[in-house]
Length: 151
Image 1 (spheres, one colour):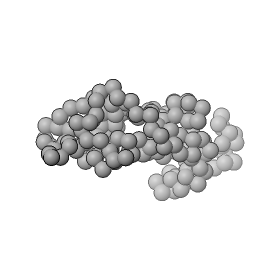
Image 2 (image 1 turned 120 degrees about the vertical axis):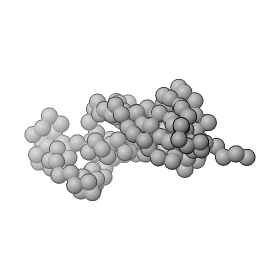
Image 3 (image 1 turned 45 degrees about the vertical axis):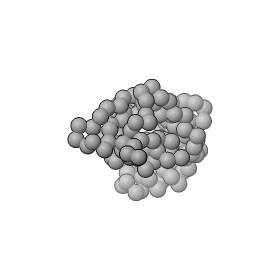
Image 4 (image 1 turned 60 degrees about the vertical axis):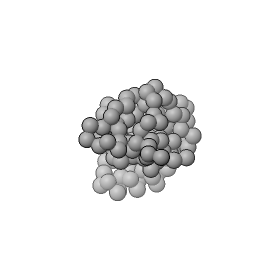
């Protein structure tokens, strides 16, 4: 399914995204390497045995990207001009290798773009949940969305 145009969003609409993804240890190690994040809490299993978690935590920025990425097919695939920002990002529960993540999106606000007549701004609330239904990530994202082309 292609993404939606600005006019197709309505405030309060909720998307329960169908695609889910199980996070692997390799995902976490690769992401930490690719982003130059050597924090022991993400990549050192021996160190993590002595933490309250007992195992490495998945990098929260990977989690944020995955939660948003899981939403794209239903909402913004091919219709986003740009992300304008993210606010109020929280990680209420940790993610571990082996967790399966799903995403839910709520449209919070829609407004016209003052500088681009071919686009509008949509504010999304993205929520990530694990296989137990625990909220693991939440963020508000403002996206500049294309308007529907004239027929």
